[in-house]
Image 1: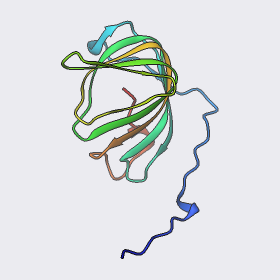
Image 2 (image 1 turned 90 degrees about the vertical axis):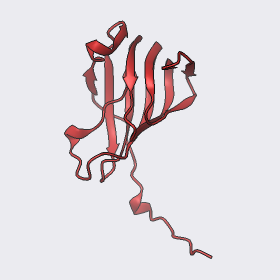
Image 3 (image 1 turned 60 degrees about the horizontal axis):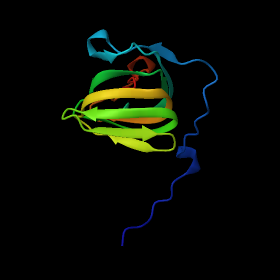
Length: 141
């Protein structure tokens, strides 16, 4: 039998809600399919090895192409709004308030914000540097 290892509360990271505005950007022009939505990202946590990052992301309605690296995936939970993910074959998945989804590693398709959205996200990038700096935080889709 394998002995249990007790986790220490000192290893838990509590994440506070942001008190300031986040980093604002727009999808790259070569990826735009509809609109030019304003996106805002609040990075809230990055693991010491740079593999995992957590934050809040919001965006206006619009649609753009996305392509995840083979080493990168994202879990997200929709707090407000409605998004639709379209895969390369044209299959669409809707994710609404109170629902969650995972964008798998290697995913290619389109990200559509149907209604202005706000979501929590967890990005995992296994190819990330082992010595992250705040400027290397990955951006949301």
